[in-house]
Image (cartoon, rainbow, N blue to C red):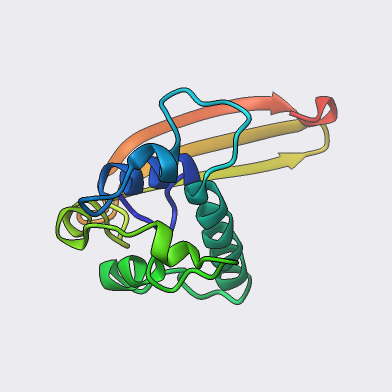
Length: 145
């Protein structure tokens, strides 16, 4: 998964599946289906989202590679105990599950003249530049679609 673009919930799930041995996954990530409680992983994901948003704002990739993503988890702050001590990952099992390159690119383009509009949605294979999906549709620009 491209950790620069992946949904935070997906990253949370991947990290929770790859905690270092000896850690209690419930104390770090909570029990399955836990609602309303905030666990250490949720705080860490919040820090990660802040970092990703700042990097995007300056037109830089959030993570330069898999190692950069893995090292992020060892640099987490927190008080009175740093989150990096509470959330220890198994780098050997996590590394093959993450990446920083997308295999596909989704592009949505909209244009209009007066009240008539047109939208094109395309998914492109980043390796071959072949089209994986293409859809064209018209819309009423006045309706706010």
